[in-house]
Length: 296
Ligand code: ADP
Ligand code: MG
Image (cartoon, rainbow, N blue to C red; front, side):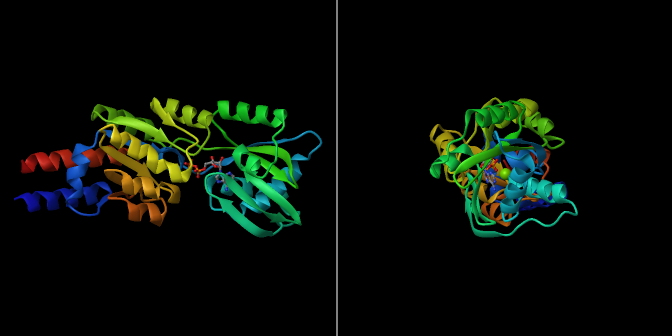
């Protein structure tokens, strides 16, 4: 009867839009008490749009957007897509974005490359600090103000000087707040984990009802947050969609990937939420509990 019930559970999962790697996964699903949620692309849509461009004193906003967009056109990051799309739109019929040479992606920090012979950086202040570029107070203030509104702000620099700040905004997915409430009803503790800034993270956490926030976590450090929770005796489920979530998904007692996410995240996970709907994470846990109580 045991294998049959598990097979039925697996089949029911498929109907709900949950792909389960193997029947044994249901056992770890049942024991989970903490759910770590990636922010961008998991709790939010990950489809960011341009919010504002703030040039540094003496700089031109259109030029800041044009060079940032040209560089970001070479990146797949949600921030990059928003900046590149806005830059292309601003050009309209007036030409195309210039090409990029020596492109480098600094995971969790930003991007760097040569555009029209200038060395351009777009990313977190920390990326600029790595290249000894200082961010003037006016730009730091612009970033802080954007972040307090929940936007993600990145600095644009070229030839060793910060030239402006570009801010992008994301929206919380329909159903994310409901999903968090449902996870709580199931007795689980939700935790938000992101590489994004503290302000944007707290803003999203507030909208969906999460108190426990880990922000500005580098991709390689996300796994440590999961490990630390496990060391404190928690049984951890991690929900994510990105390449930068893969190690944490694999480390978690239960990894859940958004079906709308990257293949790397899906491969590292035990369960896939086919439609990328966070509410289905709660369904998965409920299903596992029900299936296994039938067996016992
Ligand atoms: P998340 O955990 O939200 O998916 P990441 O770890 O991918 O975030 O990125 C963290 C932060 O690094 C972003 O919020 C952004 O500030 C910066 N960043 C990463 N990639 C880029 C990029 N291509 N362009 C600009 N900024 C970037
Ligand atoms: Mg993500």
